[in-house]
Length: 259
Image (cartoon, rainbow, N blue to C red; front, side, top):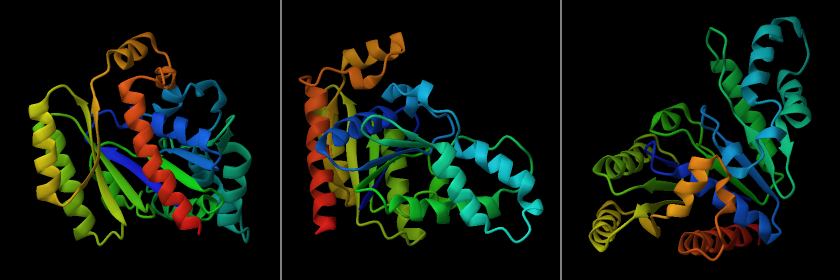
């Protein structure tokens, strides 16, 4: 099993990349769990499965938060696990999807979140590959949302803010003693050679492995404007071909892990 978390500054295109990774990995014959860990929950739209998602982990967490005192001796983790399997996992054609959502009620959710992390760790073992579309920014690192990831892909655009977030992610992972096997960098929406060189130098200087430099693609902007799934991007486009290069790396890692 390989768990990959896609993260980065908001607006850099991490959900687009996550959706295309899920789309192309799902064609490789591996069992795949996609996790939308961003409270904005844009991944179902990008994958074209919005109508199939009926319940989120946030919904289940709300029910649990209200009713846990009435459960008595019931195994609460077992209850959560049953709810997640029975209600929150969307079984799509070639992958399963779990949407985290957000809690709506008041109060501290620390206890519930700890239980959920335990359930998710057990759940993930049933898949060859898990791709997590993480919340933008840095907070999910301190909360431990992606602490179980094997590999992190940091998406940056051509902005200094994007690079600064990537740098802080590398620093935070070290400060929090997160045991990632590798932190990769992907440059997204790159339009010129100067930007390519800046990102390459940045990756070298920060000790980040540069996976790929993805070009700006007008077709992605058109799909977004129309509200169409990004997985409708033509597979022969340069952008799609380069995402498939990333998929080759991840599939190889998953197959090596299984041996």
